[in-house]
Length: 263
Ligand code: FES
Image 1 (cartoon, helix red, strand yellow):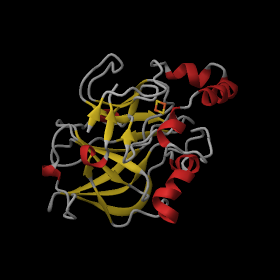
Image 2: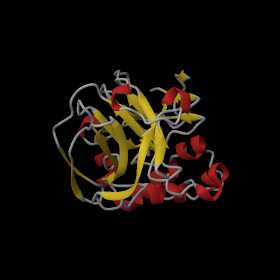
Image 3: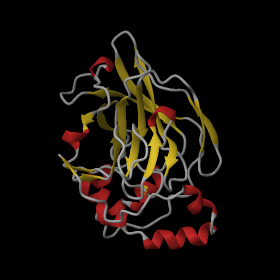
Image 4: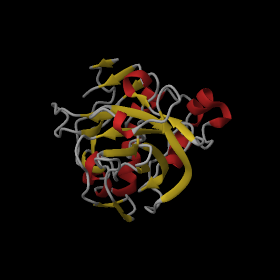
């Protein structure tokens, strides 16, 4: 289901450099206290509030391999992936959501990127027969907004809008961070201090399957598990931080999430 509900903290887009470099940590902490969006949409009454900083380093990290399956438990084939649709899967942990996208065009140019802590890395582009398939952690690099079963304020948008200066971006409606999925999750606008963490995918040309094998860039997992500890414990018990296993189901976002906020 889609909707036009505005984010409760629907601030106007801002330049991320304002936040990163003007006023330093004190200003950052003050800003964090002012914003209540995350607490509202995640309903984490008992959750600790922690800054998204510092991001982890930028090296590629290998996790257990997880083949992507369709909703019926069959291997997801790259050829099945519709263009410009968003699929959600979890990786590398049971509770950490990711976006899977077929951008519909070859994405072959590598992107040189940096984390918030100046760790540099190179993202090498899409995978699959058309090099058009990409995947990213769905946890916003600003204040950790993520898609839940109930509602999502972050998602892939093909269209421009009053708040969305760019087409074909991952847009977080919390405070309008916009990320380019064709450039390794590079930040195009908004306060996010670093790109979305990329999910490393392997495509097997023999059977056209996709397997998640690791991450690249600034992971936000530690901050995510700290911030949403209470909520995640209600949803997953002790299993939120379990490895996702050797398979992860990829679900169309319309089936995964009851309401998607567009902004
Ligand atoms: S949580 Fe602030 S822009 Fe996403």
